[in-house]
Image (cartoon, rainbow, N blue to C red; front, side, top):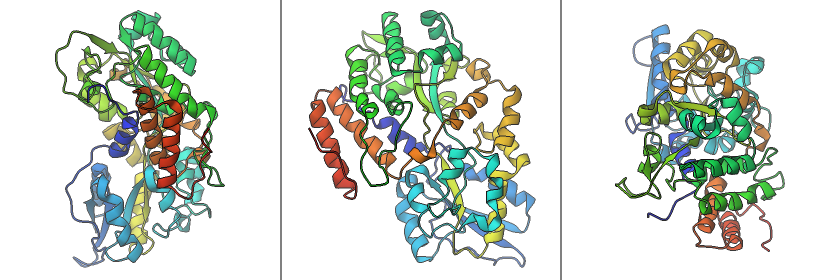
Amino acid sequence: MKNSWKLASLLCGAALMTACGSESDTGSEAGGESSNGGDEGETTLVINSFTDELQYPIEVFEERNPGVNIDLQIIPTENYVDTLRPALESGSGAPDIFTGEIVYLLDWIEQDYWMDLNEYDVDSWSDDYLDYVWELGRNEAGEMKALSWQTTPGGIYYRRSIAEEVFGTDDPDTIGEQMSTMEGLMEAGAQLEEAGYRLFPDEGSIGPYTMGANPVPWVNENNELQMTDERLSYFDYAKELRDNQYTALAPAWSPAWYASFNEPITYNAGWEEMEEGEETTEVFGVSLPTWGLHSVLKTDAQETAGDWAVTNGPSPYFQGGSWIGIYEGSENKDVAFDFIQMLVNDEEFLTEWVEETGDVLSYKPVMEKVAEDYSDDYLGGQNHYEFFLERAEEIDPSNVTRYDQRLDQMFGTSVGAYVDGVLTKDEALEEFYAEVQNAFPNITVPESN
């Protein structure tokens, strides 16, 4: 589909990657029984997750606690909710500990799946955590159902050499001033296009920023869809990018998208495999959250290592994230809590975790120490930990709703149909409202013009 791209693909891909490292389809089926069986005095904990990133902390915990055996059962992301929910609701075969991602977190914390961790006085930890990460694990009744060890704010990763050539500097603060408004982004796009470059791989890269500097939730407390001028601007800015050829038309997660991080690519390769073409271009930057550095760039852009930096876009955002809690019916709550305490609140372990994974943590005491004198060679010596901690402080958890992932995807698809010329703006907006109403009958959508 050479001439078709999906603005929602970045968000869809983020849901699949979940900001958490590699997935695995291996492991036992969900619903293993927790027990105190086995050798006398040994405790077996069952953990259900959609990612294998917990394998390292499990190894550390078992080494520290010889009487504990942990059975990590990995369920593929696409099957996770449908597989795990019946066990949590019935109690039959439920794990002791399970993780949840942001896509369904705000639904699950309102259920009786996770216990209230305040039984272990975790509220006394709150000052040590980034506010948005901490508050997203708390339900409306004030119970702390799930904690997260990571924070996933986003930014614009860009090529230093291109910045130096086009803007006369590769300094992240100076480039960030240019990118701090949507108008500034468009001006940068014009400068880059004139020099033969493209601002982003695809138009979806601006999606996270069209909420504006003072965003409001997609859905308010009265279950009304809030269609602000900032959100509507997505149509116009995406069309401006397309019409002025400020992007390479390389959809997120396509072969061309990955190739754009290393070399000139064929313009408008779309979803096709990369082939030799007459017109090629190089891409300046890409919007990605924290985990994009290690899971995308350092993995798939090794030829341009050292030529990257990261800076802000027009507004703060985050993408992905994993939360973890204890099943309400677990018979091993104390041991389960010991594991969670190590994972999210143990300074020695978390310092090792940063060194092992490069993750950006929600636990400020460790991150502040790491960020004191850090430089990343891949980013030309930049201290990205310091940058992302500042971005994370700007995120307002009250703007996050349980509907965000689906609404972002549906809206991105509608914007894409407009930019592709399939629908007019009014038709695309009307189609979006209809899809929202069909998917979420409880949400009241604005009246179409």
